[in-house]
Image (tube, rainbow, N blue to C red; front, side, top):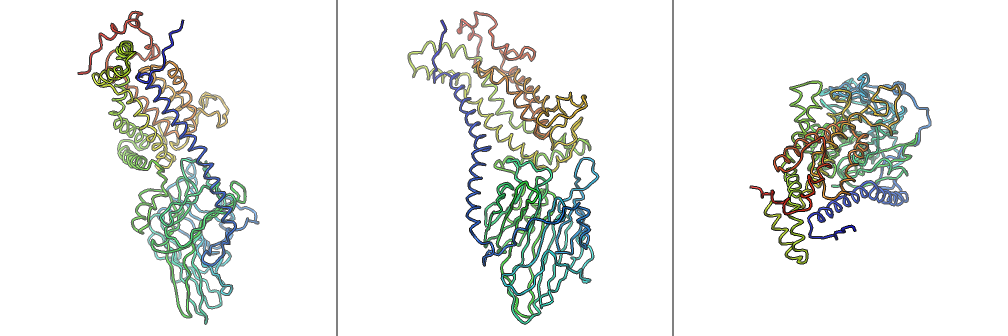
Length: 624
C-alpha cells in the first residue's frame, strides 16, 4: 500500500514547492502580458485613436502640418542613380559625409564614416538616402501657409548656392547658404552648418519685400519610405518614431501606424525623430519653442509604405520690409550615448537620452552599459582584436561577484535544508497532532541552523531584471556591433552563425534559420547541465524531472539571441559551477562529484540512513 503523505503547509518542503509554483506562475503571467496582452491592448487603443483622428482635418487652422507624401509613381532607382537626379552640394564632416540636394534643399545623402554596412567593410553605413531610391530616408525644411497667395518653396524648388557662404558643409566651417526668391516679394534663405560630430544647425529666414503682410509657418520633416535594413520588430527594443513632447514620451511602432493615421500634438515643446537600433535622425527645436507635432505612417511592410515625423512652428507674420528667422538642429548619426547626452546638456533638451532605449529596467541597464564600456576600454590596453569580448568576460566576473553574497546565502540555505531534512521529519512525526508546537519547533530549527527556506527564491527575482538588463545592453550597445570574438564569432551583436545541423559547417549546405543551433548555444547547454550536476537536488522528484529539460529548452531559445549574450551566460554558468562547488565544500556533507551528478545523490547510501532519521541527523551540527 502506498504511503500518501498529505500536503502540510507547515512543511518546509511543501512551502518550497508552493513558492516555486508561485514563481513559475508569475513568470508565465509576465510573459503573457509582455508578448500578448500588452501588444493586443496597444493595438486596440491605437486602432481607436486612429479612427478618431481620421475624422479630424489635419489642415485645420492651428494644426497645420505637412501632408504625408503620396505614393511614388516613378520607378525606384539605385542610390547612385537617385543622387544624380538633382544638383548637389557636398557634406564633408569629420564623422559624416554625403550631400544636400539643391532641389528642395533636402538633406538626403548622409553616410557615417566610422561605421560599415557589413563585415567586409567595403561600404559605409548610408543613414539618409534620396526619396527615389529603394530605401528613401530624408529630411525637409521649409515653409507652409494657410493662405493661398504666396508662392512657397516645395520639394521641386531648385535653390541656389549663395556666394556669401561656404561651398561645402564641413565640420566647424562657415555655413552653406541656400537662396530662393519666389518672384513675388518673398526671399528665402536656408543656412546649414555642421559640428565635429552629428549635429547640423539649420537657420531659415524669410524677407518680405512685397507690399502686403504675409503669414507663414516654418516646418521640419523627417520621412522614410522603408523599414530599417536589419529591422526585426523586437518588443524589447524600440525602432521607429520617437519623441518627447509636452513632458511625455511618444514612441509608436511602425506597425501601429499602418492605417495611415497617427498622432497630432498641438502647441507642445520637445523634440521628435526616428530611431533605429544603432542610428538616429532627430529634429531638435529650441527647448522653449512651441510647435505642432505630427507622426504619420501607412502601408506597413508594403512597397509604398511611408512614415513621417513633422514639426510645424508657430505662425510668423512679416510686415513689408521685415525679415524673420528661425533656428533648429538636426541630429543625424550613430546612437552614441556620450554624444546624445552632450547635446542634451549643450542645447538644454529634456530627456534626449530617451532615444537610447534602456527600457523599464533603466536603473539596471544604464549602469551595466557604463560598466561594459569601462571594461572594454581597459581590455583595449591588453588586446586590440578581442577587447570587446574580453570586456564582456570581465563584466561577467564583476556581475557574478556582485551577486555572490545573495547566491551564496541561497545555495548555503538550500544545502543546509537538505542536511536538516532528517531532523525536520523527526519533528513533523513527533508533533504531527500539535500544529502550533510543530510550527514553533520548525522555526526554532531554522534559527538554530541559520536556514531561510525562502532564500532560494531571492536569486530568481534578482536574475530576471539582470537578464533583461543585460539583454538590452547587448542589443543596443553599438560597441558590440561587428565586434569579433575569439574563434568563429565575427559579430557579437548577431546570433552564432554556425549550426549543429550541418555539423558546424562541415556539411556543404546552409540550414534555414529555424534550424539554426550554433556552437555557442550548445556550449551554453553543456554549462547548464554541468551547473545542475553540482547543485543540490530538489526535494520534489517531479520538479527535478521538469528541470532536467531546462538546458535543452533554454539552448533552443538562446540560439536566436546575439552571440554576446549566449557567451556571457555560458561563462556565467561556468563561474556558477565553481561557486556552487565551493559552497557545497564549505557546507560539507555533500557528494560533489560532477561525474555521477546530483540525481545520483538523491539516493541514500544505505537503507538504514533513510529509515532512521534520528541516526542520520546525529552527524548534523549547527554552524559555528
